[in-house]
Structure formats: structure tokens, C-alpha cells
Image (cartoon, rainbow, N blue to C red; front, side):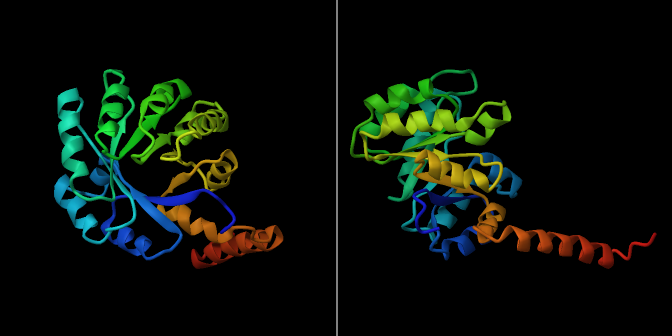
Length: 235
């Protein structure tokens, strides 16, 4: 695992899980979003984020804006970025009306605000950003590879193109987002992706790395056998 280049950011909004994962050396950062926070029952967005930042003081963590209006997005970006030096502001590449937010992202980057450009699906969406951001302020580009794959397209082709195009700027990191299986981690590494987001259940599956397949087959049979026994099934 140490030979793999892609680092892991834990994705989620469960406070206890975040604290536990922060203890693992394998976890190099964190991401969350309003959808995950809502599912976790978070009522106060800012209070939750500040609570997390009391424990996550050094590892990068991304919090997302949730406005759809340009002026408010900018205002929220300033507020979120001021919460901590390790904070990245997640801004979608376009708003709900399809308006391109590249110019705002570039402007904030030049004001030294760390941005996580999220909901990226194509190379053309981020080409302008890669060309125009500075080469000193950290910026993450999150390619939603899992959702691209949901459409029947191979996301590796898109990810590789973005990785290759951004290589001239060392402050740009490409992130493989929305994984659908743990194999995506190895795909991300193959593409030269700097980061992948994984939920806690996927992180646990890393224990299967290079597990003997015959042994794995036996373990699977044992699982079926034990579950049938526990259920007291009869024929």
C-alpha cells in the first residue's frame, strides 16, 4: 500500500467516524458535503464544521458552499475559508442553472483561498481553471469518476487527461470522487490521481489488499454457511 501514490481522504459527516479515522495514518484528509451532513442529521452547518475543526487541525478538510447565487457563493467562500488554514472551500464547477463558476473560482484562487472544485465531469469544464489559476495556492479538482461510470463511460480516460494537463502546476491536485467500489482506488492510482475520497466502509475493504483469492473464496463460503446456521434455516 505504501508504494501507491494516491492518498486517501475520508468522506463523510459522522462526527465519531471522523474522529476515529483521524487517528489512522492512512487518512490524509477529509471531505464532506451538504447531502452527507443532512443524512447524518446535522442541523447547524457552521457549528458542525467548527466542531470538526477543533479536532482536525492540520489535515486538509473540505466544506462546501450551498448557495446558487454568485454573490452569495463568494460571500460563503470567504466565511468558510476563514474557519481554518487547513480548510478548502468546495465550489461546484457550475450552479443549478448550469452557470459556469470558473471565473469566480479563479478569482478566489488569486486571493489565496484554497478551493476544491467539485462536481467535475469533463475535461473542458476545468481546462480554463487549470490554465488560469496561480501556481502557489493549493487547489483540488474533484472528478466525479463514479458518476461518470454510471453513464457507461470509462472515467479513466477523462481523469488521465485532466491529470496530464495539470502537471505543470504542482499546487493542483486531482481527486477521484464518488467511488463505487474499492477497485476505484487502484484505478485512481493507475491514472496518477493524487487523491481519492473513500467512505469508512470502503476504507475497511483496504484490508483485503492482495488477499489470497483461494482463501477469500473459502472465507466467503464460511460467511454464507454461518449466516444460514444463525438463521436456523431448514429444508
